[in-house]
Image 1 (cartoon, rainbow, N blue to C red):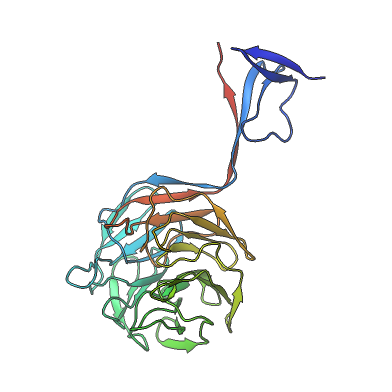
Image 2: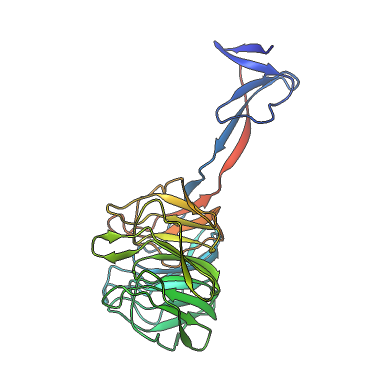
Length: 328
């Protein structure tokens, strides 16, 4: 039979050792240690606000293999001359301005890492593309067709996919850059723009969300296996202008417009999407390219709240913690 220790009118169980499987909010008195202890858990994961971008922006490109190393470039509001070419680099604690894009553009899409990335497309259905080498941007061969608002995946400036988009209408096209030239690959099953993508190689990617008409916000998710796209389980909430990143088997999707703007975050485990902790700042039109390695980490930066924001948030995976209380 359990015994109890009275602490300021509240009775809690007394045990000789900590319980093996405590639940969130549970408290006990450890008689061996002579301490009041408790257990907290955050099974959903959560976002924490970190240092903001130097320049507020929306509808811009991004790249990053982890949440501790990212790139932000271009952005709106569109079109030029209001569009931006400013580039910033994230080192895990602060954003630093680095060399600008050669061309100002909003609705530009990005893929790669913070030291090796591609910026492609943009407002006014630009077909231009630029390559980032960690120091500066260089113009590369134009895309096969002009467009903007693509989904993307890829590891570096010699291995990226851009899919979907809006060349004056939604498209299902799928384009691969190999470091020297573009190649058209098999199309998405669902034509869409303002979607999001994840994947650290051109051979394995995920496409999710987007819009296929002015009032149709998609939950569709498709997986790329280097040969074709296959329909898989949908997002719980259809949306466009969302952020996200990860791989084709472990990914996060956050924010977007459904309407209205949403702060919802969903985690992909390779089979299905599960809702997790919401963004602190509800927003859409974030970086296309994102930053994050899997479904336990991510970086959300910039966007439209409405009005451009510089807010940056970092996602932390679900946590558990045993805490000790000081009592008198």
